[in-house]
Length: 254
Length: 187
Image (cartoon, rainbow over all chains, first blue to last red; front, top):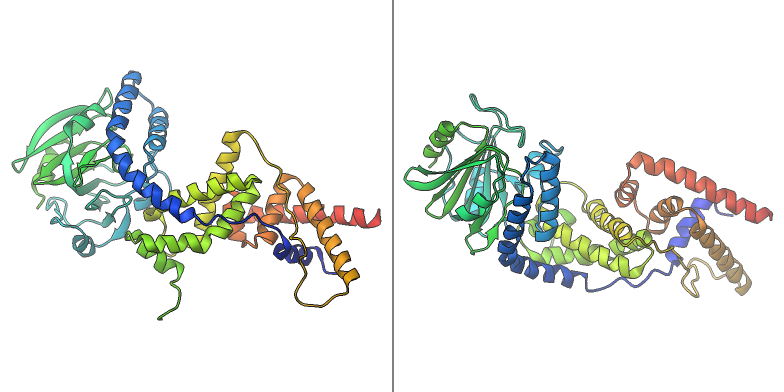
């Protein structure tokens, strides 16, 4: 008589499994369409965020923010996981939802704008590219600067500076409303381009991508951030920099 | 090579670049194992269908987080199995998995007598009934390894446990099943 494991293995071909549905791909295809429509509903999602922000009148703990983001993620059906803790495990690109690792040349060949490299920081240590469906239309490039003198490593990202670029428009109304009570928001100018300096508590970020959809990026919490709009390219510098440092780095981009 | 099906890594790379036909091929390739895994976890074909559907959608949206060089099948199974477990948890109901034998199944490697076929079918039915009667933990690990023919890594992904735990859990489950078989034989 065959042993038990052989009998169990033999049973596998005799099991009467329910019929596998044949329309699973159609469901994925439908969800892609709904995803596009959802972007149009993102404005409503932002309104919900504002209400939550008001409710969170106290200084929210990181756990509260994480819970809030998780709820928001469910609501928006965003593609990427939020970063609920400062330094989750895993490769950098994965834990921060930056997309796929690549090189500057390859990234440049995939996007329509000239990628801006801040001369003050030098060549990036890593480059990531995020294309639709998870990235904004037109794609998003992130330059990672691991360690840089005079800039502390961020407790939220684990690196000194992140420079993120995408075609679109920085939307003052949205991210101003997404700020926590302890964050400050200040209009600035970078090389003659309109920009904003956001400092203080971690905040969220949204911009209008090149198709006019409101893109909430990866929903990760941002550290101190300089954002400027260089003729239709939204450039975002994140890190624990002073305002003067950020402006100097921003002005060296080109 | 012309006419040769693309391997998983090629499909994933294409899908990551936005090629929806590549992801469709992935879905077609793995929908059966994904659905059956969800069925083993939920015990309900309707819940398994929902979990498989949502799992494939979530995997599609997470393509950019798929690690280059990793195995696709365990990754998909992990996502779908999580979805299946979440459905069981959120619905608050757990269907008892009742695996059945295909009617008239005959092993293809012999031409047994009608009596032998009847006895073998009876033995299979009894063994399957014993598996169905095991605890959920034992049943899941046995069904994953032997009925779904998942590897150790895939079983770990499907059950949300470490691969080492799969081995120890499987060993204990087999020991308990064997004891029941022997008990029934001597009865």
